[in-house]
Length: 442
Figure 1 (cartoon, rainbow, N blue to C red):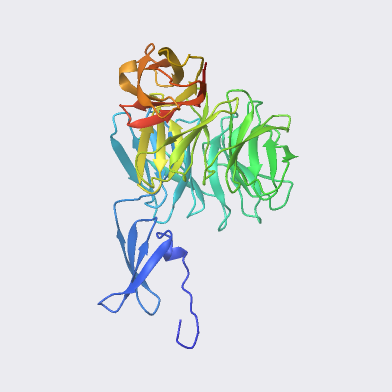
Figure 2 (cartoon, rainbow, N blue to C red):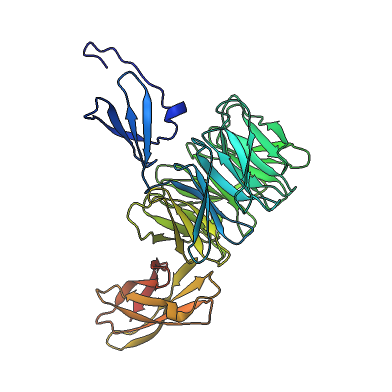
């Protein structure tokens, strides 16, 4: 910008596609301008006549975007800012494979052909990678068609959506790369997410139209269902273990909706999150999703009981959750460029009826665990009795759970107290809180 107010803009696409959230620009001693790519973890050098001359990559914050369990029992993930696809085995060994510059790989899924499939947000392609790292790309079409996620259909093909208004399609791609498009009836629907339903159809959410749709994979027929309310921001969805669809709502606070295959909204549950990218069924039979902010992972049972687990690293920005072959949850963390591991654990507090002045000793909570090898020795427990007293609990239960937490305490006065029981997993360094219990003290 000149001192006379004349502005010249230099596009942030093309050669600048390697930079995500450009922040901080300063004049260097070489007469050039230097700026930061905050989320892409790199530094750029830019001349005053508008030329990007160099890009310098930093290691931290590769933008781990999405993850899924691969056919080789490794967890595969995409590095959105670092242009890579990688895998991590259960012992923590990481192998990465570089994708094309500016490809910005996003959603990834295990395909029916034994390969991994992912979308390239920056180059508008769908790609597959073998478990040995060989990548094949398929162009979706013209610029900015808007592929966001991809899923494996019941028909042995892959399915994705083109969310750009001028495309507005559901697309089927065979394992050989042959694509067929199916136009969405509602113009400008903005479909980002699609998933197999329990009824043999593929289901999707329409962000702009606030509808839920389904497509028959055989006939290609699309049916749309209006979703009640306004500004719900319908996003990621998954088929729950109860045979219903569970949908993330991108409202200001956040919410999870339960939706039937008859096209009816069954229930809505408020739960705080600031990303609505992915929701998965855990090995414990509950649904899990990253919160981005607050810095944790949330769990909701099919009866609507919500609990959260904080991530160990500050500002990790959890983005996706995969269920590993070990039954554990593997969390893609955008800001740290890392994969976190935690058990699929949920707890329920008990209702107890002690007498004041008399020692109480007994069970105060139970925890389920989706990790088959978990033992009581893996955990420590703490009981907050609600009257200002906190002490350690005793854990019992068989390998793989469920686990019972018991405690001993004497209440001084009668009344009703909230019981808060936490379970700390010493293997994964994660702390889980049970839904509150109640002490009715006589």
